[in-house]
Amino acid sequence: MGPSIILNQTGLIIGDNTLLKPANLTLEAGKLHLLTGPNGAGKSSLLRSMMGLMPHSGDIHWQWPGKASLPAYIPQLAFFDATLPVTVEDYLHASIHTRAFFLKKSKAQKQRLQSLLEKVGLQDKTQRKLGQLSGGERQRLLFARALAQDTTLWFMDEPMTGLDQDAQQTIEQLILQLKAQRCTLVMVHHDHDFVRRHADQVVVVNQGIERSGSPEQIYGASHNQDDIPARSLTVSRTSSTSEVCS
Image (cartoon, rainbow, N blue to C red; front, side, top):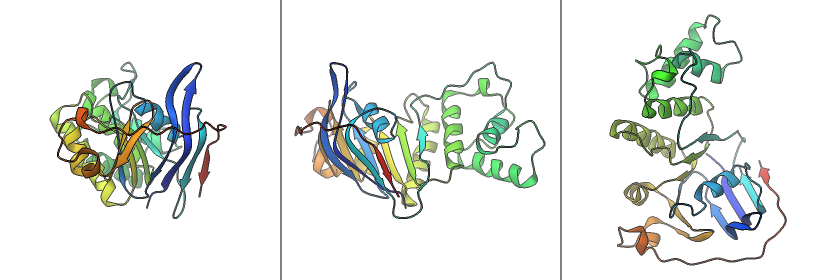
């Protein structure tokens, strides 16, 4: 099972700009947590703060029920240098093995690579160059690399934005499989139908954490984010610390 994540008076101020007002939040272990809100509300900043990639006030704790592991991160858009003469198989191999990708792979290594690519639907693209992949194929390759980490903590920043329907369905199924495995999943997402159907907890972000709860508590009978009732939380700012607890 993945860890719980606890934010204690966590905020984000850069220069004179308050990106996130300090607030408290608990994300339960082994659940799917969706961060939603208007564009520019600070969702990605909150996600990156939870990962320890942005300075913040207050505390952020990862509390692991078992052995800790490094988190997986899926960005909104996958960027690859299209000029690199690297195949899908070689890229994935280089991402998960210390052995140089141009050296001969062992049978066990080739089987593992094939298994990972099958999970994301890229088993027939092993020899395709990175620059020849579509946006959806690149995103699926990132998922394959993250799956190789065998971690139970995932951070995802709008992983399905701009993808075709087939790619969206593949990634949605991967996310639901991770949820069934009791991974802790924290994801920025704009698809409110997905949020309503699959989220365990919805966190409404708008320059701070306005509200959090189950989809039923947040949306009620509403199908429109504009109808979500907001409840502002304002607490005092503290010194910036981040701690990972195992």
